[in-house]
Amino acid sequence: MENYTIILVLLGIMVILSSLAEKIKVAAPIVLIVVGIAVGFIPGMPAVEIDAEIIFLLFLPPLLYDAAFKIHFPDFKANSYIISRLAFMLVFITTIGIAVVAYYLIPGMTWPLAFVLGAILAPTDAVAAIGITKGMGLSPLTNTILEGESLLNDASALVAFRFAIAALTGTAFVLWKASLSFVILLAGGFIIGFIVSKIVGFILKAIRHNSIGILSLLLLSPFVTYLIAEKIHTSGVIAVVTLAMSLSRLSASRFPEKLKAQSETIWETITFLLNGLIFILIGLELPLSVKALSGSQLLWYALYGIIITFTALVLRTWSVFINRKKLLHAYEKHKVKPGRRIIPDSILLSIEESVIISWSGMRGIISLALAIGLPNVMSDGAPFPMKDAIIYITTVVVLLTIVGQGLVLPRLAKRQAANATTPAR
Image (cartoon, rainbow, N blue to C red):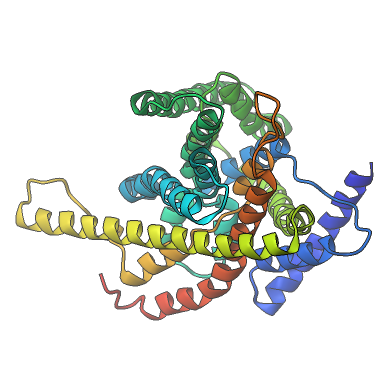
């Protein structure tokens, strides 16, 4: 009961702080995280620990659903090349890059543990990216790529995490088997999401005059879809995203305007409360992870976290600019040889847009949930190695990316707006 009381109090604080952040022109996630850290260090403050299962079941489905429902599908499809490269290819590259740095940098870090840490820190977070960039006036192209990437990369990160854990417990890693499993997970998630969307669409048609029934069904559908997909060992993330995009297209053509307005109000309220609570919980995690380590360990692991953050930023920047160059090259080739696939200039990134996308790779609640959800013991009964260190390093990286990069983003956004009339393609 005590935890529930604390959560309710935190929700009340979050509502007040979000309004205050808007007045002082600072992104609400940054204010909430800083306050969460301060609250966590109050003497006698009861610990509010993040439950990984609750994050994946209670927070992830509605937030993914809302973001995917609102995304403009034609723009998402037009930018599918760079979105897929960032959401899939970059996640695996980042996992490997962080693993290499961690293995050679952190004493006691084995290769399997290094890949576990890499998989935990590889995905950017939809909640963090959208929460930080909201209201900055970013170009539609930038928003589409950031939101599209964040919707999909959780799936590839969870797959990488599963294989890293399997390798840690002694299971041999076979590339073709891992690749086949990844494809099956994605395809299975897509199929589940598509089937559930058709079932929900049929039921919606049958109860089309019952507004409460429709809204209730839409509210429950992402949770049910996620559970079904995870139960049969496919991607719950892809299933929910597929469901949301399918229902979004159905909504645009069949839902009355009054119902759309009611649905939008309900989802905005839900996502506002969940988003705010997530950022406070992230802040509260730092005091908990600090207590598990000694003073010298805190300093060294914080340094490792800084280096890993820099590594992830470099890899992301390299990937964004490499893919920008490839798109420009394909566009130029089409002008010379019109028979090739058409590359519209509307999807070509400017320098400013590329910088913002590179800088917007925040890590968030998914990374923390993965770290905290690590088992306490191995299959042989031995304690899980370096779990406290992994949680602390993850917390440091999350805070650095959200607070550090988040404070710089508004300046980059203003620069993009200033150059919007004459973008440098």
